[in-house]
Length: 367
Length: 211
Image (cartoon, rainbow over all chains, first blue to last red; front, side, top):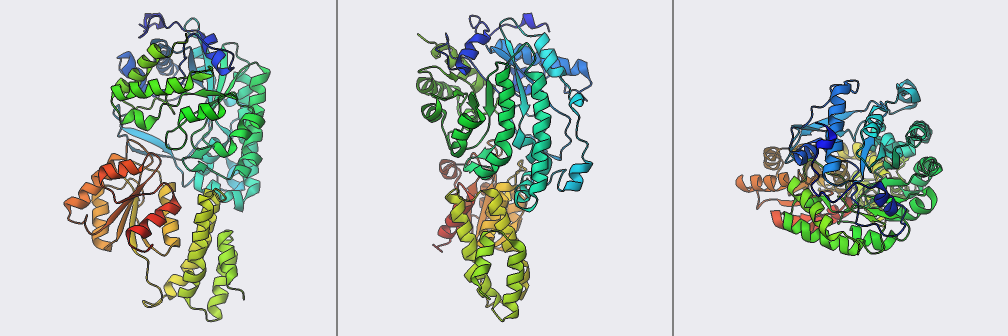
């Protein structure tokens, strides 16, 4: 279906990336609170569009199917009033994955997970034998396609997974954690390799004229704190993230960080040393977004924050009331974009997601 | 030898040293139960405390647990019935539909470090498997883990299955995991909730009247 045939849910909400950029740069007040997400699951996208889910491409080289999925995504972003469309770059890194029955409301039958207990690289011999992709092996079709089909007023937010994430996914979290002590040489080699790969990707995505911001998904925490000791993050992770931030800034692009978990122990590092411009992913159990805005809102943009667990287990009226409380706390002074605390997963009831957006469209207007 | 070194090397996660010192202590005639109760269990309690104080993180906890397990592998076959009674028996697992096991493994290790006997059912565990394990092991406690909002309802299903099998009054149920709260524990009729591995040990001990 052509992109221009999409009916926006809120017709007056015309896309304007400058609105979001003002928030990301904390440069005064926009006309209304813009929306932000790292991504939405295809099942939610299709439900919002009232269409069947575009089939999953059998391989990344099945361009027709891939493009059909991206068309749906672009129409979704237009329909729900985003000022951007996200586009991921996924280097071909083979990993160990598991599957379980998908119990979501919009189930995809099986949902995949990275194997936490066992990875594909456990030794220097594995590292040497691993088929590491060269920079020219990275496929930018998603970015190019989205950029070439952007609705008026929008820009691309280019997303990638992160430094710590890729290392943990390739090694398995538990073996990685132990190797921090048993095999620091392997750990250093892994971070160096992933850091270099991401740096080469950033050089390309930041150079694209239709990219308006970059969004790194790098989960570094759980509800009780960081995944590893802050000193390990400072030694291995932050220098590589800083390199990506520098590339983004050299191209005049804001750098947004999505990281789950309680990162309060390292927020000063992330803001002052790594140099992030926006922080995304909050949960009420450890840091409600209103508290994050109070603590860090004068130093970085605060993004999203509607607790996903709450979204899943509440009704639309409760979601609306919650939305009003979040906006009341986070709107003053600007520097805030509205969205979920993590992503629009297929286990979030669509009626609740639409209720939170609708309420924000009504309440999130600056005077 | 200085037996206290077993404690110190366990805390710092030096598995080869703990193994070496444990074998040395046995050779010098120290009772296996004494090594466990005076050095390994206090060492893991210290590790848990440091984890709660954000001095230790998951990697430090994992290497300490590995050191303890290395020593236990030597000591357990040598224990007689009168040497050391387990603090209790815990059936633990990640509930149906959920494949995440790090949190469950950490709780399991810390409970083991506190002297509990563990029956670990793994991940994606259906309610009936918990029921069977409780029947067979005569466990005192069932510990349920879930990372996902969507798999949390399996905790309630499991508690309902224990009830239907007439086992609910015989076991305490403790739950934990990223989206889990005390409120949810109250809602589904669990006996306890723990936000992290160390407090899971504390809560389990409280429920069994050991603390």
